[in-house]
Image (cartoon, rainbow, N blue to C red; front, side):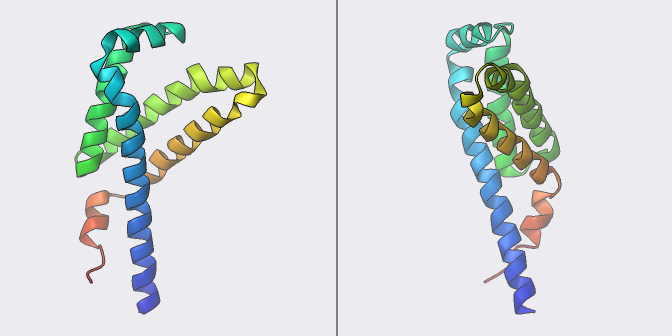
Length: 135
């Protein structure tokens, strides 16, 4: 019984840590894009993407992160962030890695972020919170 409770605690806090880490990453990168539209547009143009996607992406990152923080619309929020990171991999990180194998760190980081969101999609935060161990 004690081992089961311990395993449940580990699962609960592990998922909580993954969620908070992903929220922090997307808020850190999303807030500047959402606030400084011109800089975000120029950065996206530099990646060969339409400039208007910069601020839109930043706003989406901030909104989805806040929703994920409070466990609201958690599946939609995870999917939005998953698609954003998949887009970053496809348009920025993978081409950079293919051009120069020394730039693998960005690709590895973004792949871990992608896997983190896939993992969070498998667990409903409201159910996990209700089943959270009481001390």
